[in-house]
Length: 202
Image (cartoon, rainbow, N blue to C red; front, side, top):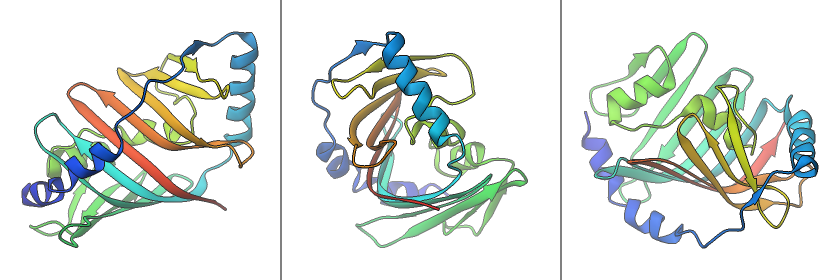
């Protein structure tokens, strides 16, 4: 079952090497910065129909996988397609409140109650997909308390929530409100690296 994971892992060192972070500015959120963040969150609160394209890398400290990612979110329903640039294999994860479906791996389609548990069972990947839906937009998830630090651009630089450190390295400030283009999440030994090439909002 995890053969696909090993194949996808062949490209992971290349992707992570391209995503080595540089030291970032970290400012504690004062009233003004937190107010600006709350305004961003209000503006994006209804943004539940969007898609992104980019590169994804995942590691558990020993094994990992990487590839090009297409992620489409339509309300509570989602679809991820990950294609390895090395072997041309791909898998598709789709679902919503009624469960998740993983297709394209050896052994045939797999079903599970949610995306997180299905990815962990099939690939051994620890990816907080429910929270990541908010984090990828630069928002705090509704899973519990969160701490924010801000960069020189007055946008989130580090978000700490649910045991994860979510590091924002680049933003598309040409959009209003701005959206992230590099999101690195870590909860040792797990790492998720997302480099976003394009955003589309519907």
